[in-house]
Amino acid sequence: MSDVLSDMLRVVRLRGAIFSYVECTDPWVAETPRSREIIPAIMPGVEHLMPFHGVATGSCWASLADDMSSAPGLRAKVVDPRAYFAPRPAQLPHALSVTEDGLVPRRDGGGPVRNTVVCGFLGCDANPLNPLLASMPRILRMPRVAPDGSSWVGDFIHLMVEESRRQRPGGEAVLERMSEMLFVEVLRRYVDMIPAGQTGWLAGLRDPAIGRALAVIHDRPAVPWTLERLGEAAAVSRSVLHERFVQLIGQPPMQYVAQWRMQLASASLRDTDAKVADIASVVGYESEAAFSRAFRRAVGESPAAWRRARRVRTRPVAAGAAHPN
Image (tube, rainbow, N blue to C red; front, side, top):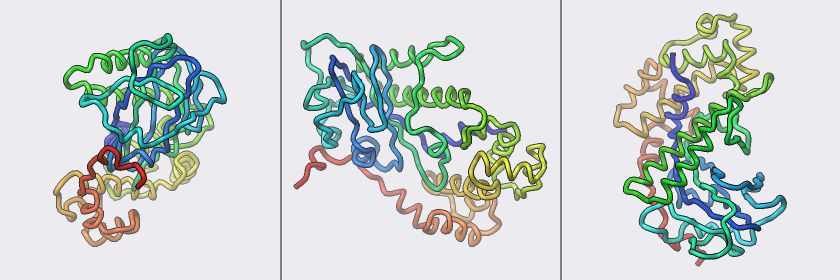
């Protein structure tokens, strides 16, 4: 059976990027601009950007206003997206300090450091299907120590800080992978903590019947699935499968099958030179015409047009380009 979570993360192109680590002295507050304003600077071309912050030393408050601070209620005086487009050292990440004027390059001297925070971003696709985004809370806090006593997350964040400080060759690539690993571990812990009765795609992974249904859909997407065949694979009746699937995943099983096929097809169109007819066959369509009609219904444009648009390589915006004229 497929590892459904790994399948999803792979197909939606989870990508990590470390922007900096921040050293703070009380009182301090750092506020992140809206993600859509800084995508061209951080990860050009991604559809969804999520900031993350790992507290290596000290403590802080975080809120849904996308800010962190040394005390509740503080707001940044300056929230300027242009800082993310400014020239940076040739090798990232780099150290920043928090001042009244926002984030600035760290300088020796000043007050004692009370907090060290790793700040980065995770990017992914949002369309045609990414149920992770809807099933995650808007803010996800993960303690450094797990309920079983392990400190994997906390230890890993310290390793990220150390890698940031050393700036060795290949450091950026290492930190990108480390941020992705950290996110996956946080997701796995979150799945383990989901209370009974909660809904969403991640909750569906834990449900025995729905988990089996998702696994066979991901494992064999080209099979001509019917509700009856999925029920047999999940070891439940058609009615139970339909009811549980809608309750947890938020859509009927066959609609999920169609959307997962479109997500796989979109990844092949974007990442390979395979013919549309071959992609159609791989995801379970008997003809290119039937696939093209289904793809247009799902994403709003033909497979060829979608491929052309995604093949355009978007380069980072030049420094200063975000400044108003």
